[in-house]
Image (cartoon, rainbow, N blue to C red; front, side, top):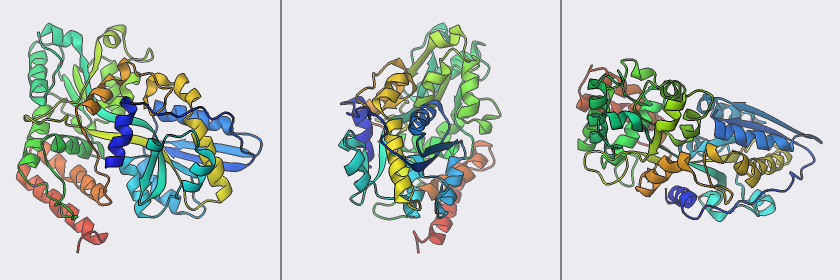
Length: 411
């Protein structure tokens, strides 16, 4: 976790020294990319593809279903993909299943322009190269807040007050949204709110879940209060649905990913009224907490274990080209890049403010994914009014414990 925070804080403090890789310098090999699908990662893949030709083939599969296929596709021998672009949490299953290789030799040979802070090291071995920082934070319509004489909220209690005022003024019918689809997103919203409420997920030094407590109840109750100002179909909300809602002017306040900031204010979907009045701010605190109710993330690339050394080297070189200074300069507005070439701008303001506020990194523990899955599965019953917060949290712990025992994390 300290590694993660060091990497992400470096994004806004010193900004790392990744120089352009002058020419790909590879003669043959297969580069097969698997990643999530949003503009920043599309830009990285575009620049990796510049290494194609003269015996080098570059293909890509950029899909929102990447988590569901990563383990299976890298378990094959040879692996279906030579690189998977990961974040804190999505790298853990690949580590657990021993599906990605150490990058020490490739960094020594081809990583002379990478900064040490980009090297994600596990048990003394470099296992990923980080290239961008991310966090969920507030997106706010300043014109609508001005109409109800309110400033940008700094706490979730202020978000509730603002949403209530905007709704009662008849400005927006359902003024608030966050990513509450129970496919992974809802669990992430609980993680954010729970950490902001001062909770800890496990008994120290163990894999025993400990979320059925006061912080868990507070986090659930705040999520439930916020849903009163979201459309009744809030359990369908993911990035793909909330971004168009924002662009259409159907929201006043929302919390979602910083890497969506450029997309919501580009000239391809939003009106001039929406673009000129959208403000990016820190994730709010909650319940008198001292840190934003959000988590810090990095995105980076890994190299598959079950591929030839020739393909691994070609892939590493292509990906270094994919995150080069040239790519950053051409796509500066699409992310908070971990590069000396990155120029911070207003689009990055929300991520930078959330980092500066002291938000915690997402827990990078081998069993955290199982707890996250339990949140996704159990929280909808509470948010739909079918059971109490205490019952939901007890169900979360029970579901997690069963899964953790099956996978050997608990006896």
